[in-house]
Length: 420
Image 1 (cartoon, rainbow, N blue to C red):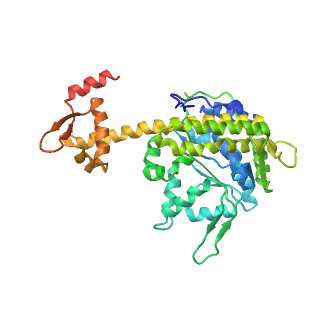
Image 2: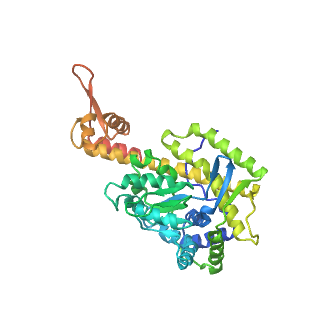
Image 3: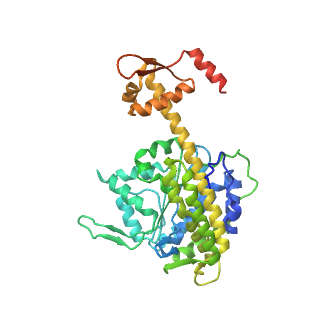
């Protein structure tokens, strides 16, 4: 089965969320006039945070998943993403206030790598949230000179429940058998491309994030306000999840296992049709269905009267988790392809600027752009096809050199009119 890269944004499957989350998302989205996916993603990440390190979903003896989600909301400035995320996180902010009264912390927005180690060891769960995600990557290099590489390596390990062991000069070592760190941030498309350059793509950091880029809705005067009882109800569930420190390993019911197995196999079959540059992301996305299933299962338990959660995930929960996970998978691929297009356009502008008013070779352009001659030649050939550059061969002994220059202005103008 092939992966169908969506050509356009598909609406978020809001009906799959539990009723209290669904009602809150609808109210916030209507009030601020944002796509429901922004609020829903903030809420799902909040629930995943509150579950903490006490609960996992066991798929088989060697594979267990946590409720950790790393999510990025990709949107231009001025699209009301900040107030939408703030209201989406409001119930978790309430939990953070409750936790601080008990000398714990849930949300952190500005920290160094070393301080994050201490927070993760000391707290049941942490959401690392930045309204502008660039601040998180910037913090890797801020505290100790030369430490940035170590911070990134540590951060890459935080998307799973893993032990943390840190030796500190002159201080007691830090240790926790498992740490729980969710990540949520917003960023502009151009900044994301610049920020997640080759270094962070090759080491797998970008591949660990879910990416969404919802459409911008037209402004309207709201005719309703938020029902505070819904926010309170969500907070009460988050509070119960946070207070649950009994280690729980959930298993799958027979029907749920069939759904997860089909999802797992289908995910593998679609791997062959994913672009090579997106394979790392697609590989990481295979674990999304069980993670969302854990989030939905525990959230429903927190709203009930049972003292302990049911130990088997139901068919209904796994079916909803699979549909939600597939929406996030395809939306992430859509955003990656969109970013690829923006990156290609940026490289094209760099090459055009380097050409200037001269007639130059790919090697000459490469010196001014820090790109290889082979890469420049590939970009220049596309620009020739689009009419933005012209080329000619320069003869001589050995292999001829291809020279590139900008065409006369009249030709460029005709091309632009033809492509409007």
